Amino acid sequence: MTAPAPAPRHLLVVDDDDRLRALLKEFLSRAGFRVTAAADAAAARRLLGALDFDMAVLDVMMPGEDGFSLARGIREAGALPILMLTARGLPEDRIEGLKLGADDYLAKPFEPQELLLRIEAVLRRAGPKAETPRYVSLGQCTFDLERAELSRGDTPVRLTEAEAELLKTLALNANVAIDRYDLASDGAEAGGRAVDVQVTRLRRKIEADPKTPRYLQTVRGVGYLLAPD
Image (cartoon, rainbow, N blue to C red):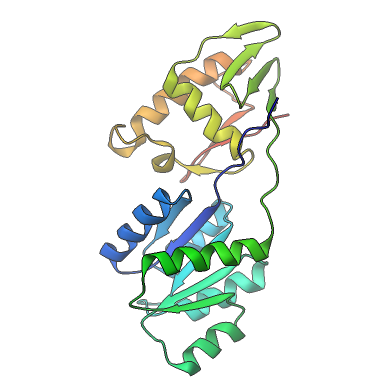
């Protein structure tokens, strides 16, 4: 039996340009990454406190706190890889970014393919993502990630396609809070209401007491988290 594919690398993209931020999220998502975007440093700090990321792509010129200051804060908090993405391409600006702990620096305008190659190079240097186990234990239930099948003991538990996909996404990112909007499918209702309905149904199938969930937890202000045994 082969193990399921590892969870996609999670990128934090911070840029105050709405159009560029949306384009980057679409391009990098199509390249196979999970992408969460923020319009400024304050929003990025909130996301960093709530979610786990594999790398940050930071604009330098932003209103309020700039990317250099944000990079300094990220580096002081840990070893999250950082790529600075900015219109300030002068040598002294690149040196400043690298001094603050950035792993790479790309000046605007840039070719999307070059950005992708640089991100992949930084992540290679950071090392491989930990392998994901095939099964996760949820009390009396077991979820098979490869088959996206849930069972209670030897008895299969029926899941809809949407429920199976949601549970698989959460299981691949076990113990990590995931934004409701990132969990929503392309056809989901605005605001993630369809996700809320699926979570309620999953809790009825997994939890001993769905009103006080142990495994499928709500993370206030963010979304949901799966906490296996």
